[in-house]
Amino acid sequence: MTLLSRRQALKSTGLLSAGFFLSTTVTRALAQAATPAPTGPHKLAPLPYAANALEPQFDAKTMEIHHDKHHAAYVTNLNKALADYPDLQKLSVEELLKDLNAVPEKIRTAVRNHAGGHYNHTLFWQCLRPEGGPGPEGPLGEALGALFADKEEGQKLFLEKCLGVFGSGWVWLTLDANKKLAMESTANQDSPLSAGRTPLVGIDLWEHAYYLKFQNRRADYVKAFFPLINWEFIQQRYDKIAG
Ligand code: MN
Image 1 (cartoon, rainbow, N blue to C red):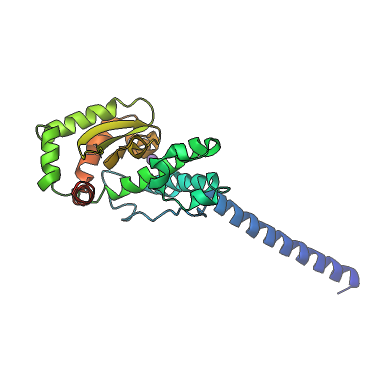
Image 2: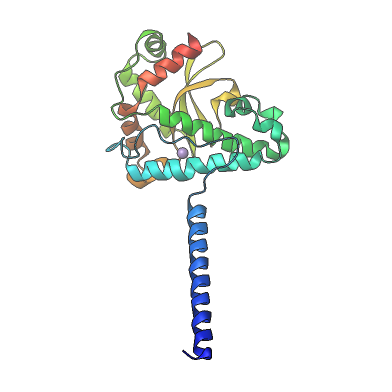
């Protein structure tokens, strides 16, 4: 091998290595950009079941995007909003939402949206399970009975409430300070916690929650939600708060 060709060989190897290194770095950076791992005090818990566990009502792709992208983004953006506020970083997401006036005005809207998004979605995943389960009994069953004549009327009124939400928001069953059960809606990612009420169960009415499978058919999405409701979890939650 001549000196020249050796140099050329080294040069091209070097370029190849640099090119390989660069492409690996870029590939990694792109992968990270696509699925940012939230860092900071607030963490994204995995779904409490496999992404396809709620098939056929809720499809796996929607569940993956909803949890891994949308919910993750709320956590990431909440941590970003709190980056310069170490005292606020020590508060739980519930504590932040219960007293938004204590949050500096500069980041209040960001905390309202992203702490709300984080809290609402964490509850939403827990309120669902593959086989749903029988309706609630005991005190929660009685409280629901006082709110709705029967299950059919309850589902009908809940569906009407869901269809009445203009734009993005949520419909909830909540408990007020007197532990009275009510049905209500909130806009955007607002949490009932910020209005002094505790949500027991809620349905996400943002299009990202259903558009892939149901497109504009929000009613079909709400009807698919009913048999997935994890009443056992909600009953435990009610007993803990109202008991
Ligand atoms: Mn959502």
